[in-house]
Amino acid sequence: MRIKKLPEGLINKIAAGEVVERPASVLKELIENSLDAQADTLQIAVEKGGKKLIEVRDNGTGIHPDDIMEAVSRFSTSKIDSFDDLYCITTYGFRGEALASISAVSRFSLITRQKEFPLGKELFVEGGVFRHLSDTGASVGTAVRVRDLFFNLPVRERFLKSERTELNHIMDVFFRYAIYHSDKRFSLTVDGKQIYTLLPENTEERIKRLFPKVEQLISFEWENQLGRVSGYYSPDYQSGKGFIYINGRPVKNSMLKKIISSKLGNSFYVIFLELPPYSVDFNIHPSKIDVKFRKDRPVYELVKTALEKSGKPQVFYSLSQPSVKYGGEFKILGQIENTFIVVYYNGEVYFIDQHVASERINYELLLKKYRSGGIDSEAISPVKLKLDKLQQEKFEQLSSVFKNAGFDFKLKDGTLYITAVPVYARGRDIKKFVLNLINSEYPEVEIESFLGELACELSVEAGDILHDEEAKSLLKLWLETDNPNLCPHGRPIYYKIPVEQIKKKVGRR
Figure (cartoon, helix red, strand yellow):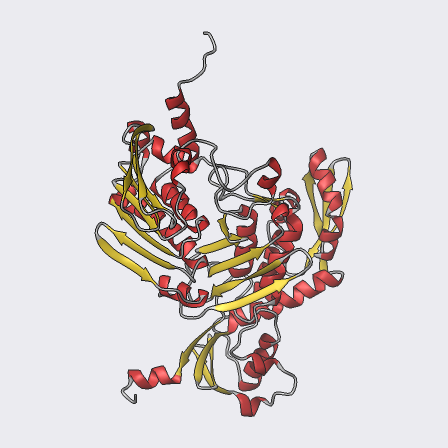
């Protein structure tokens, strides 16, 4: 079979498949174009999960009338000029593929006007085929309508999920950008019904407006010579959902997510990373949502440290100071079901899970021991583990990590002999843990997860009766931990109710 050049229309459809996976992909590209055009008001409408219509109207700068045809041509962009610009990205878009790809697989119309022109321009493209371009009355900004997505690719259209599923993906995209750009107006209309009308507000207000189940948001921030990380998490909203932003761009990175989960468990979170543009590569995929780093370990350490060190809650903060006299600051009311310590403090009643508070204490004690030189170990009958050459090299690199974690061992002729393990680790699947650690991209996460399991063994149990002095001692140690909000597995440690709320419930307010 002879080699031949593909027809232009087919090339465009193939390219569209890289950028346009589903209706939510279209919405992402259109929102980013509006934000790059300095819009502060975005009006979004979708129908039938985006299959029938995706529309974004903005009040941005608009497109120059001489450039409108270029806007729907591949590799045409106003956002970069040279190859070097690819490694210093400061805008959302830069490839010049989005509108060309979208218009190749939809019935696409665009109306735009810049403020210096009395009339706007209207462009219509159907399945990648130009239909018309004309003058029209228009507000300053751009309105894009994408109808009948994949109408000319029935196979791709059949791969779309139900309207509900596609709408869920659309909502996720809407949330990503509405959270970060809380200073802008957003509206969302679904099948003719307005779902959200968001006015400018601060980030915390915007998060709570979009996620009403979030009652408590704990803020944190940390920075070093590499960059800065800040954000929020909610110990009371255990959704497993989170948003990560790097230099304003919502991104995905599997290792970052794993590190965050190791610290926050299923807590809802929003994390903002600010890094030098040259240290981040958004060029992995045309969607630009996957990201990698020039040097990933320092980035992971930055995020991990932020979550470890910056999680002190505002409530109870004063109680961790050495000068506090407990009798005058809080009152232990008792114990419920031998599981929750009930405390009154500053107009609020706290229900503190004694087991997970104890877990947090023991976890941090073990972590300090690990980092300062070693955890107590106990001898066992040797466990044998055959390692290949690559695993042997990795093990040798990690030998100090294993020693600090309480393991004793020797490596001989490709076989690892484990002769001692950390106290309380007896009976665990040591082979599995060692292999996970050797094969891990980020072994510190595996170690900390392991220490969390050991901490569980050492902790006060639900069902243990605690006397007042024992409860006070537990509270004092808990309040001195680096993160009194979550246990090592990410479970919330306490739940609080304002007394004013109780008064309202019983009719005193």
